Amino acid sequence: MPVVAYLVSLLVFLALDVIWLGLMGPSYHAVMRDMLSPTIRFAPAIAFYLLDVLGLMIFVMLPGRARGALWVMAHAALFGLFTYGAYDLTNYAVLKHWDLTLTVKDMVWGMVVSAFAASIGWFVMRERGGGRRRR
View 1: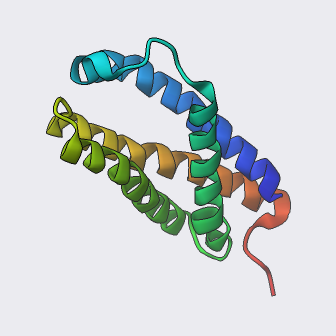
View 2: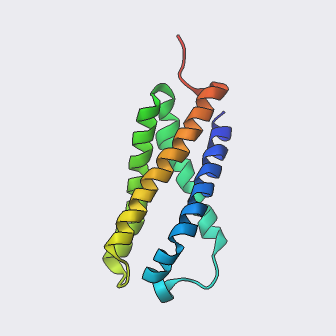
């Protein structure tokens, strides 16, 4: 059942991120200005989503099978803080136009989207028989 949980988490993550990017687009454009590509490079974008949700599966959802929803939410939020933090803090350190407000907003978003997507995936896995082992 982990495959179904992974796919559900991926869809949830993508749907929420599309909404986020739609809402935050002007903020990103204002900060990134001429750094933005005129077209989206889909291969690296797809690779990010596939890898990030795989990381949530390996480091949060699977270990969370024997734990509760709060453990999964907390660890997924931390995973999001670490992954988005690596991106945002590196940008803030080296890019002239990157700003602290966008850094903080994006890191908080990473925590929220990761916690939500992993929690939904964990719930699906648990409901489909991949959850807590009964003795």
